[in-house]
Image (tube, helix red, strand yellow):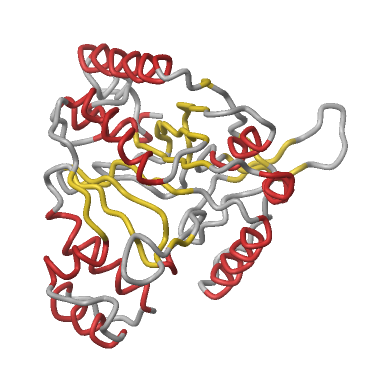
Length: 319
């Protein structure tokens, strides 16, 4: 039998459509502008751990081809809109990450991303909580720092221990036999030992400064300077990742260069840097906080689904 039919039931697709309409009403009530940005970009995401799909633009009638990348997030062009004076904005779109598949992953998936001008990460955490509660009817998310989770669940002081102690935990508790840097061990321990225990809605914030990505560093969330970012977990699954956004163009360019060096060290292709974003930051990005939320995962939680295939029509296996 040929697998032409959708993996999600028609009833699930109707319920999904209802949730998407609910999301649209949520932002309309708050007067946040819905925008659309291109899925194709001349530059790729800087994150060394994400792999974009790559394609060629072939001009009609001849001429040199141009390499383009399917976006892994609409973040960069949305920030260009913010710098141009858009005010608070939101977007729901398909994004693409090569190699990602499984019960919670599909290489093509739906992301909800929004930016609130004048918000910091704590204010945005509250709004994320409001949206998720409106869809799921769940209890308010507890807020806990990254370091406190390690202290409470692994009896480990990440501010006081050295990397060898983290490695010992990784070897003993995760059965991992390789070598990692400090952030590698922290990520391993968090994903394998902490994340599965975050069943009730939990907003984790104050990540290590070395894991800031595109967030600014603040000194007020923990006893040491930390990344002004947060992640929301429900049922042991990451649902959202948000930042108090970095607005310093020079620091952003420096972080892009660091990412490129890490790509080279990992023997991964060094990809073009988004100079449009750097120039937008130079022109002035307003103080804002932004977050990306996995819509498919939100729908999974709303329906009690165990696989992403239950809430999308055609996963990659039926593309």
